[in-house]
Image (spheres, rainbow, N blue to C red):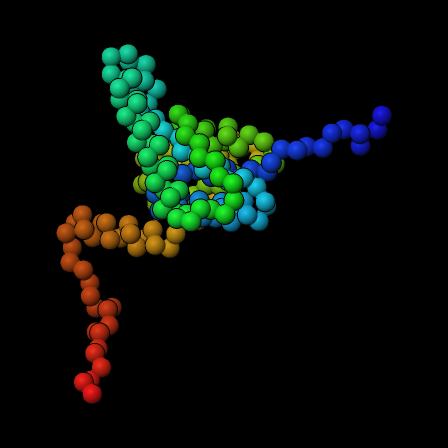
Amino acid sequence: MSGSDTAPDTRVARVVVGVSGSLGSRTALRRAAAEAHHRQAELWAVLAWQSPGGALHARRASAAPLADGDWENLARTTLVTTIREVFPAGPGVPLRAVLTRGTPGRALAETAGREDDLLVVGAGHRGHLHRALHPSVSRYCLAHACCPVLAVPPSPLQADLAATHLRNMWRLRLDTGHFTKETTPPDA
């Protein structure tokens, strides 16, 4: 028998994307849907969740079951709500919503476990302080995924949103100098 007698691979192509509900993950979700459409692939939207105390909290039998159920329900609600808000009329490709328990980077790398998958992640915040305090999901995926990884830059609105949040947190006044005055047409 020759090598060409083997059965063809009938698996459906997949585009796996991390979803957290953030503006960056919504941008990645839109890009992943476009990639899935282009590749004629299924879109797998994955939200990884953990209880606030992580693995140590989950091992404590006294509080873990109720709290974990609440966190899982919150994660499920976030995933479904985000998908519905990003795609009010549907994504236009077959969609599978996946809820998994664990750290986001590891969950995404494991879900996109086939070499022919495409993993789409948001590039996240670019500030040094944020990187120091929060592990980077995109960096983990780039280092550990066995498939190509597409890191989507943040939405241009994300910087404006962060600036507005800081201004509001410090109770600074809005700088209206760059606004133009609205004019009304003269009465005819």
